[in-house]
Image (cartoon, rainbow, N blue to C red; front, side):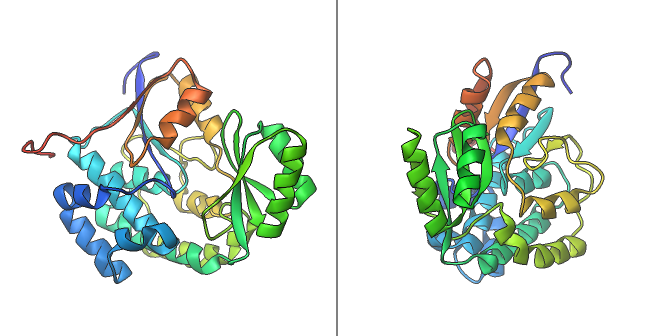
Length: 289
């Protein structure tokens, strides 16, 4: 690991990441993983990812792993992931084989989709953490993601989130309902806890070979990784705290693996002095390792 103030972190994104062109990258750098994803889901996960949590999560996992492989399997000082992305980070850091990581992700996506109610969704909110907590309390919803200064996400029923929208507007805060079919990172995901716990009991994660920071605790995973992953289903994502904590531990280079560039933007807003970039696959004709 680098010493002092010159450390690098790889960041893996979560659900909602754009997937245009990612199937081609998977076919190029991780074809066996793509084939296994189709086998486990019974279909091409990329084809239905926009409307299905069950398919979106394995598609995003495969895309992240393919990009990591395509860049030569870099080994930074630490890794982190936003929600689903922390499972991708753990697999890249050796807590599972890449195939077993995909099996766990498939069960996570399936369990979360089955726990979701059509009447529930999420609301992005331009507000600080304190304002978001006040609005959530008044509207009867919960804060699901503390992503960055001025970037919060609430979870709850659509009717309660529409109330939160009105309250936010009265306070001069912009908001937008998100196109997701579930109140993720809230007590509404309780029904997913049991099935996901069983999946992790069947495929228990080993200690990673390098530190992986949990987006649920904003600290490196401890000795009971499975328990932390299960708890994260119903707990908020603390990405702002995670970004600050990494910087305080000497991380100066934040490299997003993708797909997309959402996490890069969040880190820039939270740690303006950071060196933020996106990991790109090797050019065609160059082996990815």
